[in-house]
Amino acid sequence: MSTRTDRFAPGDRVRTRSLDPDGHTRLPRYARGAVGVVVEPAGVHPLADDRARGRTGNPQTVYHVRFPAAELFGAGDHSVTVELWEDYLTPVEEDP
Image (cartoon, rainbow, N blue to C red):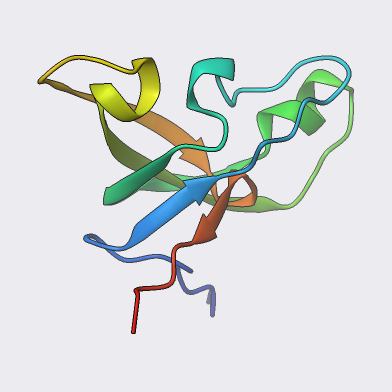
């Protein structure tokens, strides 16, 4: 029986990490440092970055995160949804 709980819930505002690792990552460059909203969890999977390096890695929640196109590309009135592993995300604290 799993006791795992998701760190983020639908509607949570999150920021992607601004990391630039050597080798493979599933965090697109255009989404690094961007703020989006969690749409839904999308399963639990080992971090693809670890698997590309031949490591087993611990499974973690993957999320669908929606970003305004303007946040990612500086323009656009549409949104873009990206699947992102929990390790790529940090919470955005609401302004007091």
